[in-house]
Amino acid sequence: MLLSLRFRPDASTWPSGPTESALTPVLAALAMRPGYLRGWVGRSPDDAGILLLAAEFDSIGNGRRALSATDLRPILWPLLPAAIDDISIFEPLAVCAPNEAPHSLVSALATDAGEFRLGTSSSVAENSPPEQ
Image (cartoon, rainbow, N blue to C red; front, side):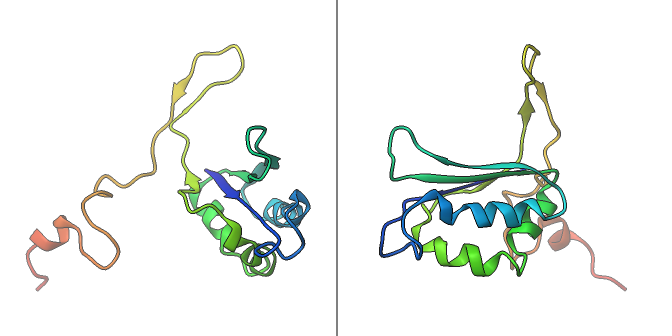
């Protein structure tokens, strides 16, 4: 699982000033979570006002649990007003090592993911006979 959070900080939304140093404690906290593989803080070479926090986890579950960890909240949440509202969690569908051909991975996406949302039931449950 790849976590990708982009930020456009300014003095009014970033408590410690609009620098990448505000993201390094978040990266350090993520690195202590189970399933963490690697991560980085970066800056866009095309727009110096955009910072990136990226981390890779061994599974979607470990990545989501890392993001919701209570020790991360006090250091990440104050930075979120400067976050760019966009999708931030991705699962790898194909990987490619240097000098090798890409190969596909099995998706963890549920087969009925596009058919129902939280608060609704799946079509299988709706069409099932009532339990006796």
